Image (tube, rainbow, N blue to C red; front, side, top):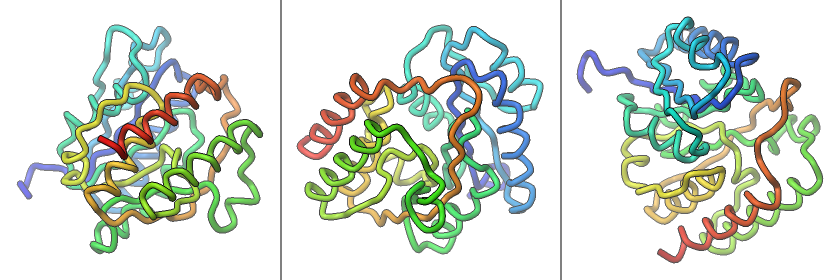
Length: 233
């Protein structure tokens, strides 16, 4: 690895999250400092019309800003394209993920015990504290089961956006999704490589500011087709 290349790239897609993005970046940088890891924080702004991009720049993050709104998947692909780290972490900008827990996801990668690590909201003590709408819960269980049937690998949280991966794996995935379905596409394609995928329990805090941008029905259909397409092609 080149001396000036960061070992970890943290990618944070953002769309109109001015009330939370500053705190997320600050905590991310503090977490990286505690890990004593060379890093870069890439904030990929999805055409926000609020101060999300400005605040990110003020926090000295590397901001990649799109002029129009494309979707989470598109933003993650932009981030992956620019990421320089040997390891890549993705987390949401709404404050639901705890940056302080990034070490839990990175540790198995650094020890070469895994290639792709999912932060699960439904493992260990976190399962009792995680509350999501019933329609989302039903859909998640269905998608988990479908992925398990197709790939032979069962996971508890296939839609989690808090992940850590080896960049060498990400570069092999040839991602196509533009929306929330990218989480499923990444997982299924990673399992097909194949690579070792594991889950670790995380603390999940339901957003208290703003509303989720995920549409359970519309995005649920996209996730279903993404799983099937990623497995078949």
